[in-house]
Structure formats: structure tokens, C-alpha cells
Image (cartoon, rainbow, N blue to C red; front, side, top):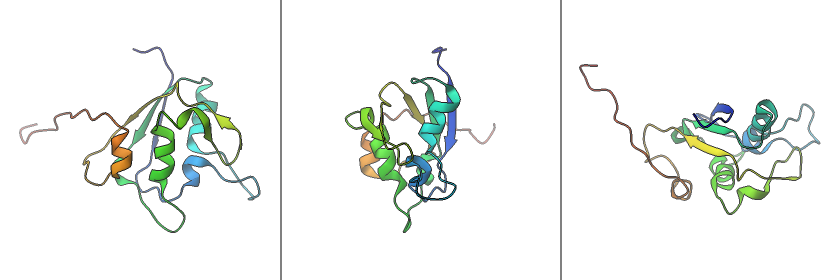
Length: 127
């Protein structure tokens, strides 16, 4: 309906920041992060990106992916997003981000502050 290309990726269970921000080129098998892969596969700078299962983000010693997503979703920061693989600023301000979640309680507060919440009714028992 928007005339934009669509890209979807799931962050459910994601524990590592490099999934979003990419690997540094010094590592064997280094790859760019999901957002650079998105721009490459859609071949446009203004796709609709669905970040699925944002309420199931993990956190461990490899980093906190919610902090990387904070940089992506914050309008003050996403015009100069820096992927570790490319190491150049990439403008994500034209990208329309949508995310899905089953519960809001597990989404970190600062990340939740950057989102507009639209509640959709779930299934009832008869359905």
C-alpha cells in the first residue's frame, strides 16, 4: 500500500550486537549487520522493515542488542547509523520501522520510549 519494498527479520533470542551492527572486518567471515543486508537486498534507502519479536531480545556477555536497536530507532541517531563492517555513516531516517511484540513488559524502557504502541486484539477462545 505504501509502494515501498519490505524486509523482515526476527530478533527473538538474539544475544549479540553484531547481528544488528555487523562484524568488524578484522574477523574471518565478517558480515554486515541486518540493516545493511536489508538495504542491499531491497536495493532502496526507504524500505519498510519489520523487526519481529522485539519483546524476546536477549542479553549476555557479547552485548545488549537493545542498545543497538535504540540507535536504529532513535530519530536523533539513525541518520548517522554506523555499521561495524562498513564503518561509514548510513542514513536510516527514511526507513519505516515496524515491530511486533506479545508483551511490553520485557521491552527495555528506553527502547519502548522510541515506539508508538498500537494494540491489536488477540484471538478469543471461540476463534
